[in-house]
Length: 250
Image 1: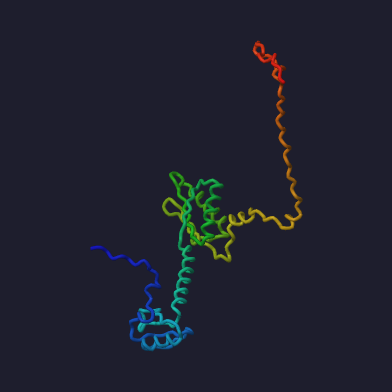
Image 2 (image 1 turned 90 degrees about the vertical axis):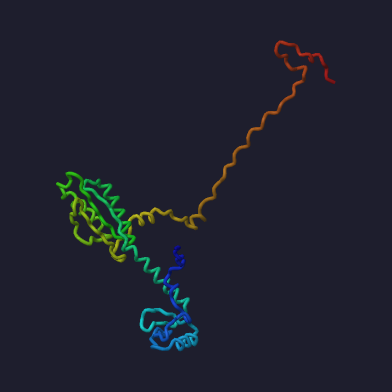
């Protein structure tokens, strides 16, 4: 047995009952001024919607009785879309990015790892730090905790650890959450990009700039004119006498 096709529009707006699609006998109505009118019959609620020139929108179908609102359905759809868009902006806070370290990491590599974590925190993402020990490195875990301490100090203007770093198995785990935007430092990478932007030329400088003289290339030398030599004066070539030497030209 084939499965039915799923509807293309899965947004919450597509499941909202409006006006004649409402099936309840009586509803709790919220007026145009967002004040409760009370429980009225469905026909009376539809009459109130026609009187105000708006729609009767069912906003809480599971309530007893269902809650309906007198509002323009187009305006109501816009409000729902705006709330959904705002909620998506805050979904980055639940995103977790992982940064892996080692107890013998080079200072330059540590700076690159810190910059990656700063970029994630500036985008409202959490950062999970994992420092793994290999082989005999487990005998000197204090070096790993020193690396984690340096990492926390460098990332302090952008985030704070949720808990103290702890050794679990053969790794030190740490979770860092971003600071609020009003308390968080700006991303240094973005500041460097703004400093290196080329300045636009000033209109006054363009007006005072002297005109550029265009140097014209000298004309190319003309080819020398070919002088016609009379046949009688032409020298003999190849050791042969000119057969036209005695010819007189009139």
